[in-house]
Image 1 (cartoon, helix red, strand yellow):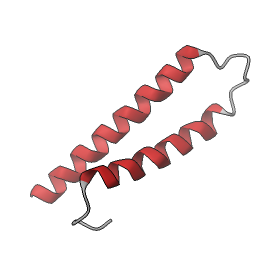
Image 2 (tube, one colour; image 1 turned 60 degrees about the vertical axis):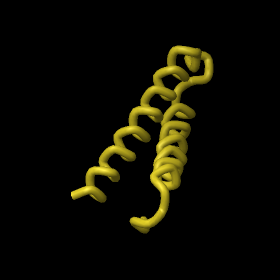
Image 3 (cartoon, rainbow, N blue to C red; image 1 turned 90 degrees about the horizontal axis):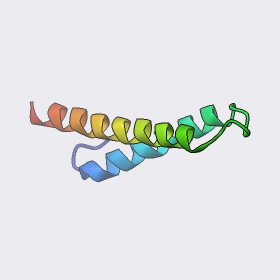
Image 4 (cartoon, rainbow, N blue to C red; image 1 turned 30 degrees about the vertical axis):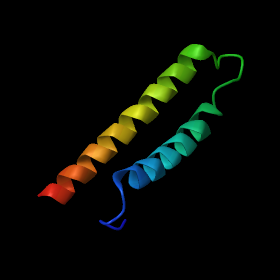
Length: 63
């Protein structure tokens, strides 16, 4: 990725690929078991990965 783009652009790409991967994983779960708790964990994982990715990117740019 280009170093001149805003952080939210790379965060959005990271979120997109993370969500696509998590959706692929969760579709393997039987839909009878796919309840709110699983959805909440998937959301937390996605948010966490976006935050980590953005932080790592900022640290790489600053050094």
